[in-house]
Structure formats: C-alpha cells, structure tokens
Image (cartoon, rainbow over all chains, first blue to last red):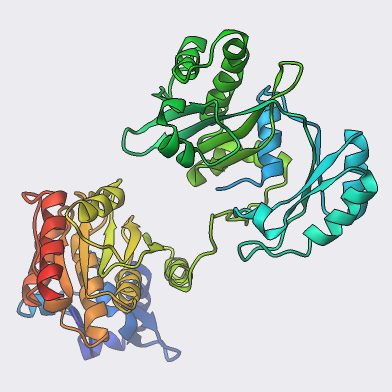
Length: 80
Length: 402
C-alpha cells in the first residue's frame, strides 16, 4: 500500500495493512491523521494528509520494523 | 477598534473631563427625552464610524425637543460612508467663545504616545499643522508613568496659550493622556474643546480608537458601553480578500495564517513571527516595494493552511510574486511553511522558482526546509541574511520582473 503527496510518500507492507490492531495503533499515534481505519478494520492512508507529515517517527515506532516507510520525495526519495 | 462618538464622550466623561449634557437615542421618542434633559437648543448627530456627517446631512440643529425628534427621524434614514447610523447623539448646542484641539495618538515610529495640542480647534488638526504650524504643540510621553501637569503645560504653552486658560486646560490634557494609557487607546482626541462664556472648558466632540488586541483587558468598559464581542468596529468593512483570509485561518485550528490586510501593490507577502510581520512590511516599503497585502503567519500552521494563505495571496489581482519571510522562528517549522507555499504554486500551475521572490525563514527544521526549496529551485536565505536584506532582494527581484 502506498500513498503519495508532493513532498512525502508513505508505504505500508501489505501484511501490516490488513492488521486491524496495527491500523488502530497507527491511527492513534499519527498527529496529522495520515492513517485511518476502514470499515473493514484494515488500514487506510488519507491522501489529503500525506503532505502534512511532520516526520515525527511515531508511526515507525508503533509498527514492526520495516512495516511502515516514510519517504521524503524532495530529498531524492530518502527514507525517514 | 473605533468607538462611536456617544461612547467616546462617555469615556471622556468617566475620565473626569467636563462634557456637555448628551444622550444617545435610537428612536425619535428617546431623542425627544434626551433633548428635554438638555433644556435648550440641541444638536442631533448621526452615529456612524465614518466622517463626512455634516456634509451628508447627518448633523442637524434643533431649538425644541419636538424638533430634535423630527430631525432624528430624518438623520436615521441617511446612509453615510456606506453605513446606516446606529442611532443619534443628542447633544447640547453650546455657546462657545473659542475652540481648541487636544489629542493623544500612538506614534508607531517613536513607539510612544504623542500629545498634540492646538488653540485652533474644530477643524482637522492636519489642516492646522499645515496652515499654522506654530499653533500646534507636540510632545512624546511615557506610556509607563503618568503624565505630569508640567509636561502638559509645556505642550499647551508652546502654542501661545497663557494665564488662566493654560491652567484650566492642563487638567483636561493630563486626564486625556491618562485615559489614553488606561484604556490602551491608539487615538484619543477631543476636537473641539470649547471655552464657554464663563471661562470654563468643556469637551464638545471626541474620537477614540482602542488597540484591538486590548479588548480582553477592557471587557468591563466595553460591556458597560454595550459593545458586542462580535463587533469589529474597524474603520472600513473587510474586503473580500480579507474575509477569504479569515476563512483560511478558521478552517484549521493549527497555527495562524490568514489575518490579512489588503493593499494594492504587486508583491504578495507571507510574513510573520514575533513582530516580524510589521518589520518585514516596513522593510519592503523602505526599499521601494509595493506590498499587495499585510499578513501574519506563525504558531506552526499546517501545510494545508499555509498553502491556503499562499494561494489566496498568489491569486490576488496584480500580484506578480510573493515573498515568504519571517523572523527567526522557534516553533513554526521552516519545512512545513516551505511545503505550504510551494504546494500553493504547484496547485495553481505556477513555477515556485519564478513566483517566490525569496524565502527567508530561519529556525526550526530549516535543514529540511532548505532541502525542499533546493528541490524546487526557490531562492532562500538563512539567518546570516537580515530581514531588511531579504526584503531588499525581494523588491529588486520584482522590479526586474515587472
């Protein structure tokens, strides 16, 4: 799963995206509402909020290593 | 925030300065009752926040209470400066031997109040200053300690007023200065002060403007005067551009971005931070630039909010480029503002490198901000470039482009 803004892109591993508990956790920790829980319980990425990412790393800390990737598109696609 | 005359008169009265008997009326019946209290000839004055009342027919003289009531019916129908009157001031028609002027105004350059006095009152003080400069006395005063009688005396005496007149005017001017400070005014003016045949002095008209930001400190006074919380009391109605700015600001609770004032220049401004807006606006003008707007941005607005403000400014007719400048910021993130203004350009189909004359926001997360600006070819400056220098570069760039 991937969503792109102008400056930021967010990738979530497919396996993690279907994890309802992780979806709820990511939704809770993100201060700018990039993550949401769909009615199915799976994770959703909120396109309009992607560029609001404040690079706080809370989602990275909340998810298993490598499950979530934050990409700075303005910096040669470097990863947070 | 401007006060109506009837409110200003009440403020003057509370400060202990003698005023003529007056009343505020919204109906002919109330006006008649007010005129009966005066017990003599009266003046019915339209209560609007704009000038030009006399010329528009908004000031009428009445010999009897019934006449005052009849004039009130007429005056309430007259629109002046785009405003319908809130009511009328029914005032005593005083017999005056001489008119004087006294005012205290905030001097933004000196950052101190200045007292202005003239023995030539009843007309615009600017006109007196031009035609009879020796009849205008001025003195800056402290806004921390009370004005002394001696200081007031010096100003009045410098215009040639002497003797008992001088002694009687001193307490009026002193109280006016104290009122200015006590109520956080930006203007407190009595024009005219009338000298009556018995030698006493009385305030015949008053104008007061209070600093908007001070409204919270004077809730009691404003409540007693009947000023509603939602009354902006600006000298003019907000423009569509300014209302759109308010809408941008209210859409998102994060930070401040949208308090805009419209001007007719070609350089759009996205400016702010700890007084930075005023400094940068002045700097642009000092270098010959023509701002399209004033604005305030800070407190860490979101990308979307910054984008909304930048879009508004970029789309303003006549705007060639925008300058994005702030003082050194501690909490507003440079990278977030950079994203917002660049996004605005891109969403409008504009080239950020072309449209952003300069980006000068040093502070939090500036390394990330500069990476973003580099990626889009936007000229930026760090803290080694002063705000004045940044403003100069923006003005030069727009000069070259226009």
